[in-house]
Image (cartoon, rainbow, N blue to C red):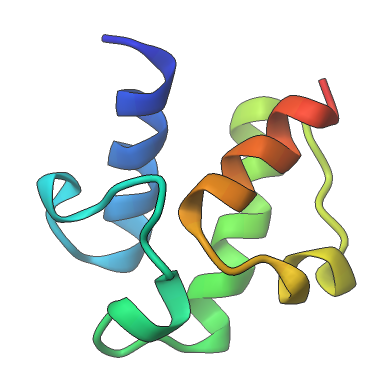
Length: 77
């Protein structure tokens, strides 16, 4: 399993959707039914726990797509 597929599965689990319904271009706040700040916080925690990358809340609030989150994790490596 490649790193993008794994990442999409982790995000899908948090967002309570099927990973096949997500792409790196998905605008998560608009496209995800039931989006709330708890899901956002869970993504920030997942980045720290799974990848050892801390994403600041202010930075996260500027992210629009799932790819933005992924790229932020890669940049912090």
